[in-house]
Amino acid sequence: MMDFTITELHSGLRLDVVLSEHTHLGSRSRVSKLIKEKKILSADKPVKPSHRCEVGDVFQIPAPGDLETKDVGLKPFEIELDILFENEDVIVVNKPAGLVMHPAPGHEQDTLVNALIHHCKDLSMGTGEKRPGIVHRLDKDTSGVLVIAKNNATHEYIAKQFKERTTHRVYYAVVYGHPTFSEKTVESHFIRHPKDRKKYVSEKYHEGAEPKGKKAITHIEVINKLPSGLSVIKCQLETGRTHQIRIHCSDLGHAIVGDQVYGNSSRANSLDSVKLRKDIQAMKRVALHAAELGFELPNSERLDFNKEWPSELFFLWSGIL
Image: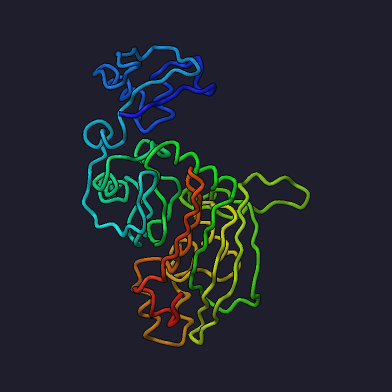
């Protein structure tokens, strides 16, 4: 069990509404079911779904690890995790490409979240019903360093750092072509693609108009221009929007190798090496790796991690980061 404290945001609302909107417990009907089963308590006593919340009320609710079966549909799934660090507050992992972050259609069990609840029961409430512990995310086909929170206090503390842009996040990528710049800051505003709701695009707006999209800023440095016609770049995030680096690289005309969403699969045909073209076409991931992550724990301890370029992408670049 874990404590859930009512804040001003929840004051005056029904308990079942609050818990369905602000915790991992799920839908309002599921919360009502848990209350009926006396799995949600106040001072160790059963509560009613219609209870009107007041600031400071404290409720005992099931922790994510207590709900891995019928309650929220989360089931433990044994996947070997590359754990870089773990203590009572966080787990830091190196996520492989191909691993989905949390349950979604087509991936109900074989996800990072399922592997985490198999590994331990102590996870924060996360960012949604099926996302316990998840502070930030990486795309399915991107590899790299991730931090997972084990409790709500740590989750909020680290999430605030992401929001205030005080975390350290560095990615490496291999892109098509040779950029004409050595360093560049790319800034745009992201909106959903008008025809494909799974994609985002940089908003186009008239000078003087107020952009409607979310600001995205990426600092890019060219590390190596390869004879193959590819380039290695280093990307430091100032903001953390969905698909941010992939979109900005595409906007620059240098799509990331292996990106089937924001790139052009025929781009590999421009490369001279027949073997390289075939190897790229056989890729099952994007050539993007979250190599560095730094943040602070609630006790003010600073943690910094660096995970080397994945071996399955060595063929793109002979150097090692």
